[in-house]
Image (tube, rainbow, N blue to C red):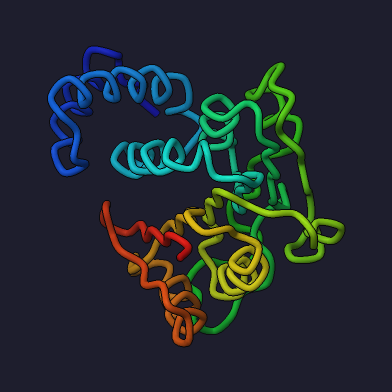
Length: 223
């Protein structure tokens, strides 16, 4: 994978921040922060630039919201590193099998075992000396046992599958305070139809509605 230079990332970031409500100066400041963060993780994530920009924007909005952070679907650890860096004083729970996708449903296009080319050791190496990351290796929601009393201010779900997405919503949603943010990757992505179905089913009787800041990425803010 080609690594983009800072001089490529920075102007691209400034251009694509127009819809975020920043002043010109605010856009420049955020674009520089994003550029520094993205430069260090770009080869450890499959998310494209705009999605990570959105993730950083909403992550920063939850800095003063009480609760831990969580990510389901860590893969190579790029976005986990960003979360650990930006909010170092909150615990970050990292949920993944670190051995490929679990069993799939008929609606899913991915296959069991996809994205197996990762490990706790690889992600831990990327995170380096950061001490707020807590690995929960195995199949979710079994790996969430013991966290029933935890609260979550920010949750990034990149599970790709119907059941993984639904299980994440069932567990995290009631444990998020007002103002907490949940981001679901691959929403409306044709290769991950189970993500949208799971979210739409779960939210049918809830007051919140997801919105799309960046294509194929849903944002949910807890009311």
